[in-house]
Amino acid sequence: ASATFAAMVRSRGSCGFVTAVVTLVVALACFPQTVSGLYADDSQVVSLDPKSFKAKVTNDVQSFYLVEFYAPWCGHCKKLAPEYEAAARAIKKEKAPATLAAVDCDKHKALCDTHGVSGFPTILSFSAGREKASKGEKYEGARDKDGIVEFVTLKSAAKTSVDDLLAPRLPYADVHSFLHHGDSSIPKAVLLTEGVASGSKTSSNLSWLASVAVKFKVGRKKSAAFGYARAEDDKGAVARTFGVVKFPSVVCVKLRLEKGTASESGRFTVLTLGGDEKVGETIRSTKSFIDLCQKMDPSDAADANSKPLPSFPPPRRPRKIAETRFGELTETNLHDDCLGGFAGTCVVLAFRTGKQGEDAKTQASKEALEASKEALSQTSKKYRNDPFSFLWVDTGADAGAQSFLKGFGLDASKNAGDDFPALLAIKTGKRNRFAVKNLDKALSENTASQFVDQILAGDVVFAPLKKVPEFEPEYLRFGDEDPEENAVEVILEDTDEPVEETNGEVVEIAEESDEGEETGLDAQVAAGGGEDADTVGEL
Image (tube, rainbow, N blue to C red; front, top):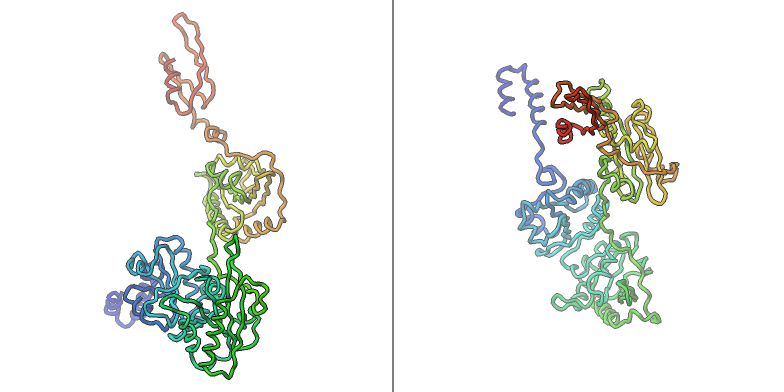
């Protein structure tokens, strides 16, 4: 493009400069956008290789990263990509201190293996203040834009330091996991505080709480788990759920497994700390409080010093995205996708295009069919989680569908505009019912959605269907065809005069004998000749 630009300027002089510039801009616009895996190079999602992963995620431990490990061929990864991309744009707009990144495991298999990736997509979060050797925590939240943004906003806002790794900040959404995941036999302690950004009672870090936590840790084994929550965060939801109104306070929880179930219940007790205590006194009193909590019986409902554990909401799970049910209605899938094999409402777009060789309206009708199919396809995505299947059929292309649609009062033998296009809703089961909505033009997504909404609201009147129609078998589909196309010529051995009859009828063949008498016989003629026609010839 640069060489072309220079050549144009030289050949045309200064007067051709403007033309050359325009030509260059157009040429550059035609170059394809560079794409790396599922994300373009200019995407807000940062594509990482082993070198950039080490520089950013491994070494930059004071920054928050959410990393998707994917394979370009993975269907779930392709579905996630636009949601992940939208989340990255939203996070940048909100100026949250976080980065969304992605690793193509087809290109960087060793990097993915290092982080234990065994399925796609796998999303790992790397919190600020983490240890350098951290392999990240698996993201289990909703795989949509809102769920990702909510998770990243909470996690990135809860920036930790090396001092409080043993006592991390607990957003309200994480309290359920903190209490019920991990070792449920050990007590779980939560410091509830207010007024200080870091959550510390007296200093810029949580060194005193971490000092308490260290006393309940031997090697990698913990005999108690610790965290903290501020009254200013989540509108004080954590403290309010525990019923705590005085700060700072320490809540200690003991769990027990319900007999015969997988659910857990428990009890908690509260220690209110003095605001004028020295750090040493706070550490000693908190440790003594946790020691007593370890001995607490969570099944003792008569314990006056403890209360029943309130419930915290579990983390959001990935929303299951159902597959769309959309396609052409044929004799093959009629029962599985529409009638007895499908327990829902079948919505059929009935269309009639012209046959080849008809007037110029044929092309227009086919274009209208394509537009209608696209509208129905988009509608199927919108209602993918509802009990509907969405199918289309063209009676101009599929003669077998004509008899099927006739059972619902849609007659393809009439003028094209009389009954078609139309939307047909079918419910089968104990009572077979149907409803028809005639259209005066190509189907739009808005019209299709209104029809489905009316069905869901019970506003569509369904008529009883006494007999479920079927597609007409192929061997019977000759009623509308030219008889000449299926004619069979039978030639007797001793005569040059052909006898011509239509397909499938009884043909009377006459031959004169040597004595001048006429001999007659009946023969069944098969379509297109074949062995039966040869037999007639021999006769």
